[in-house]
Length: 347
Image (tube, rainbow, N blue to C red; front, side):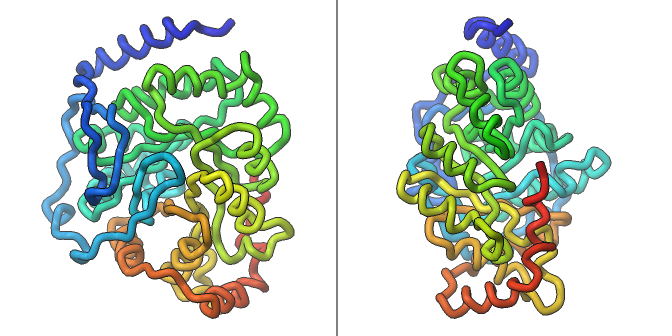
């Protein structure tokens, strides 16, 4: 049996109230990193004791140069070209809490304003919830649900709101669409998870709705053609260009036509692209992804604060690569595309 909208409101009101109450909704749009950077006008924060980092983690940014920014489709958000990924890093490992909190705090200090996580990423939402509420008006929080049906999606959303200690998710994404049945189940008007997203939007619990996928570009295209999703999170790297059906050539043209915000993931293929004879490092991996027409930002996880700083420095120095440089990167990945497209086999 499905729950009513009123029951969901009551649940969230009591759950959030138990965490300390909700501040009044702001009527002002908040800047992310520049005067043109917009966050929706009803962002609120929950009172919480923020994580206090060690002194060295709050030192001046890597450089005084800001990261380039781009509008995220038609969402009204303008984001730096690099966000922090919440999986496959200390953020997703319970035993690495101290390192995870240090990475999140340092990311804020370095100008990162987009934080990606998911209900299924272990402690990731909870770690972000220890730090981000004190900076809520400055950040964009994106999380995901792997649920395809109404009740399951609502349960994930309730859990995400509690863990993140916020009363609004900026971007709620349907995670890892792979098969036809994923999309069919999701889009059922009465029983599908899309109904939960629509209700959550109407209640102000979710601002934007997106999809993600790492396996089947055709499903992402079908999703964008059947529903006005705001964003898509997809793999964008030079190895994927050599697959039988690349995300770059399959998804990006459709997304551009419909003005869908594109977030690049798997940018360095978990570092596998940095093997000898392939890519020289993050400048080439990030440069390649962000130089693709229609890509607006990227998410990359960091194992350490030092690695995070290197990634931010790369983003600060980013300039679109010329055609010759892109072609050279594609040439060097031609013989290793299979091992660097391992995520295509996830299902």
